[in-house]
Length: 436
Image (tube, rainbow, N blue to C red; front, side):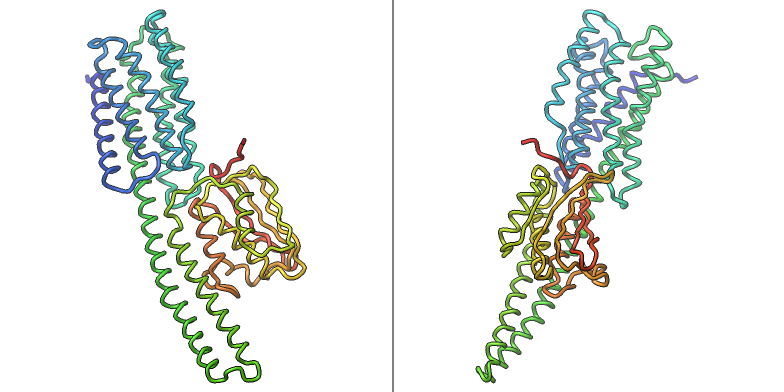
């Protein structure tokens, strides 16, 4: 009857992880990848080297086969959660967390040279690896993206499974004392290393697919942007130029008869301003999503937007000055367009604009409110459609697109005659409160 050979399993894991690492590095050099991709590939390479040292246990010094191998294993797991945070949350793993490797290495050294104990070394590894894998598995589950739901769930399972089996192994070893070694062929030791093989393959495959899906989504969005820019340039601006040409011809014919000339010039200038805004929109839309999202202080962003508009005596208040949001560099355009719309359509009685926020289970609710005349129910459904509105019909459309880059949603939930109220839901991980 066949019995598992743990040393052979170590060799298999070494070869699989080395192959996966090389495959990811090839993708990294030849395709577009995102934050954390190279770190994930590097973690696989370190993990493969650790298993090679495990395989050589008894053939190389214990410094390498125990201390270095175990420390590299924990380092590779920490690098994976770093990669996951960079990919999903666009935030790196705090660098100081890597300093935890120093006491880990010291603990391994103590239970190797002073109080040699395989079980206690395994307990130390379990105490560090299992919580990290659980945290790593939770991160993909918190992302709201229906297109990748199945892959993200499978990704989380592939991360959590080895951790669960590892926890069961140390419990079994502590409950049933025996002379355990790294090469013990008991049920839980064998199950853990088989689960490690399956987990590494599934997790890496899911990570690669998520990267490819994001790249495909960006390509689709880029094509849509090109089509929209072409449509604006060819259709919208052409229509405005035709109208401008007609008014210029009328101006030439009537001169300044009975004051009609000044009226026509006013209409011509309005068309020129509309064309200017349309051209400016194409530039903003073309740049949108090209730079990496960055952390931006909401208070400073609102002040920057207000400074570019004739707010005059309108009071603009931001509740929290320490709130920062991860968004596209064009984030200030969102508040620029909201304030601009308030000034244009809020009515003469509008005096105040307030930006507030509160945390919810789904994320941070960022609210922009004014005390103007509000928005009619019949207009609310089309408010963010391109071309809808009395001006260019592009401002709120652009605002929604800018926010969507970092999965921020926006909706108008005010009541007619009681002011406009725009609610932006910032997902967990895309907001923070600065401590400076």
